[in-house]
Amino acid sequence: MTAPLDIAYRPRGRFRSNRIGSHSSSEVGGFGVFRDQTPFLRHPDARRIDVRATLRDPFGETYVRRFEQRQAIDIYAIADLSASMAFGAKFDLMAELCGTLAFSANRVGDRFGLIGCDHALRQDAFIPATASRSLALRAAERLRAARCSGEGARGFLDAAAALGASRRLVFLISDFRWPAELTNGVFAAFAHHDAIPVAIVDSNEERPPRWGLLELVDAETGARRLTAMRPSLQARWIEQERRRLDEISRLAGGRARPPIIVRDRFDALEFGRELAAA
Amino acid sequence: MSGFGVETLWVLAFLPFAVAPLLRSALRASRFSAIDAAPRDGVSRAVAVGLKALGAGAIAASILAAAAPYRAGAEHERIGEGADIVFLIDRSGSMNETFAGRTPAGSEESKASAAKRLLQGFVDRRAHDRVGVVGFSTAPLLLMPMSDHRTAIKAAIDAVDRPGLDYTNIGRGLAMALAMIGSGERDRSRAIVLVSDGAGVIDPRIQDDLRAEMKKANVALYWLFLRTAGSAGIFDEPDPEFDTPQAAPERHLDLFFRSLRVSYRAFEAEGPAATEQAVAQIDRLERRPVRYVEKRPRDELSGLVLGIALGCAVALLLAKLAEVRPPTREQGA
Image (cartoon, rainbow over all chains, first blue to last red; front, top):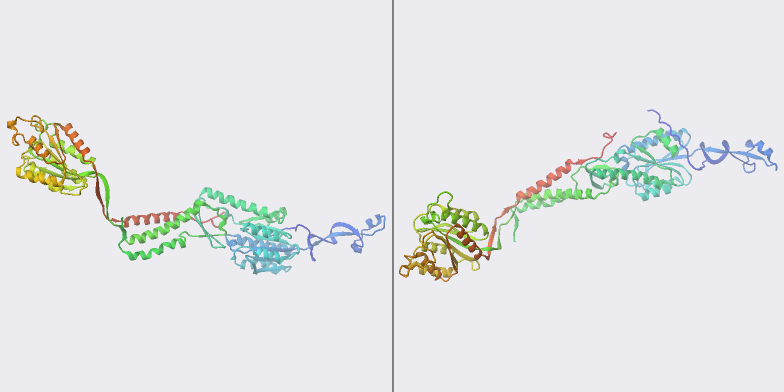
């Protein structure tokens, strides 16, 4: 098995943790990018005394250079294990994405955790944030072993509660076929994290047949609906799917990054580019 | 009014199976991530309801057909315009001649054919009459008993222009016509139409019987006299010394009919046109509302019901053929 490609990511916003890592944080320290100068008494680090600034000061104050401490952030993948994710290749895409994220996170020294949820948290797909490479890399395996069977995605709200208050980088991986009020609630719950919605889309869902009778069974509720496909309805269907993604972006606005859409195929490079842009 | 029934009732015990299509869909279902992806659509909902109805209909109709349904026969009483009419038609030899008294040649029409043509038209115009046809020459001939069967009546009238024979014995013909028309329902208008080209002497003994019968039967009498050119007419008054039933039978028959004290009209026609007028007049006079009974035989409905079942099944088959599935990964790009 070839090693997955790295995904380069950068947390947004100020976070602090107690582990040195590779992301610029709001913590100040003695290494990294220069941040500011401050009186010695506020930051009593004798190794970082700024001689030039101290000599220049007419009042004889001693100054110390402060640097932005680079720290590690916890990365969580919150995976939607409701039954709708079993359609097409969505589940495989999700597992692949989790595996790549776990690999990338460990490479830069971040901790990776996995929370699977459907209508509640799923214990069989839960890995707390860990720096252990082997455990993190097993996340994708754990995820693949889990079955998509749940109904609804209210577990995302529980996951937000489980994450606690400190800021983390959170990938919300789902197809987001949720009621608008749940989507809204989830984005609100994750607002103090750096949340990145990843909408997994199977293009077969967006490509209904032109003519014919289509009897659909909802993967989650088991409800049936007969659809008499015809060109006008096909156009409405495609339009509705397009609008659905727009709606997710709109709901995410201000609280989460704009959603990254993974359609049919997961390309780590492409994903990294979109992540940087998002 | 009309009873519906089935031959084998116990088969209907299977009818509850007809709800099966309501419980399960006949179409192969495709699992989909969320059915809300499919836009809500009125046509689709109508199709769904329609398919369920077709399924239930197909099963119910098949079971019903197996039970052999029928609609019981019934008699409908209807009101129409018409009468009971007996055509009493002269079949004596002279009817084969034209109005000019010759053997018909070329396009000439014999009196019998003219009478036939006009009576056919008469029958055609009057849909609700019951008609009987009696021919007479020396002896009366029952051509057609009272009937409302159009085809039979017309066939009987068709037979009128077969070559006639012998003499004119009106008395016995009238007696047969009267016997045929009988004393039917009171509210029906009844008439005897005598079509002849001559007259005969009615035996005085029969005369009394006829008089009594006519009174009893209360029928209207129309005499359509097809007068041959040159012969004596109904209304000719001969010299008093020749004014006997033997010398002027037409006049005396007319007098006899008048003495019957029933509704009586005589029409003297000297050609096809005049005959037509006379027939039209009779047509006008004999129009009274009548009640008539229409019989409807018992109808087997199995075929119809099976047809419905087949129609439903074919529609379902078409729906099944129109069934599609969402594209899958293998088919997709």
